Image (tube, rainbow, N blue to C red; front, side):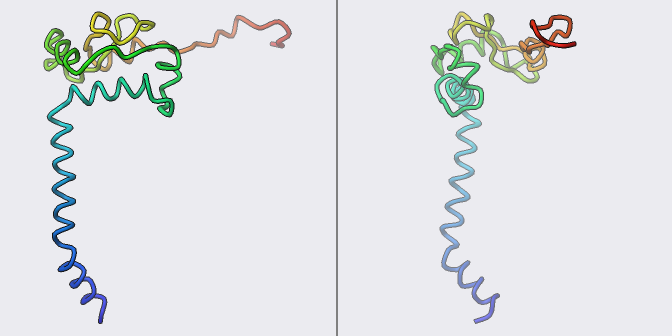
Amino acid sequence: MTGAERRRAWRRKNHGKVRLDNERRRHRADRRADNKFAMILHWVRSRCECRGHRAFPFYGGAGIECRITVEDVAEVWVRDRAWKLERPELDRVDPTGHYEISNIRFIEKEENLARRRTPVKDDSVREPGEEG
């Protein structure tokens, strides 16, 4: 049996399975797109609750809890008219507070990035014993 014949036989045997896998993949993507509020909540929860998440030390590890539901995210989406924003992101008004309906809002991604707290090293302040 040549390579081409083997490939044809494999395709005949597995055609239905491959098609089914593609349909499942497409359905999964549609479900995610249809339920953006659930995906947003998933991202928030994973930062706050999953110890393996790379951002956990800054969220859940720092004591920040997720106290919102999908309905809360949808309500804030409507309240803040997030569909009019180019790149909406969920933001906490008080960065040290929990994810609660009174402490969240949708803002532009650029504005959210500008609000980040990044540690700035000041060279004028030196620890005792440091040479400089």
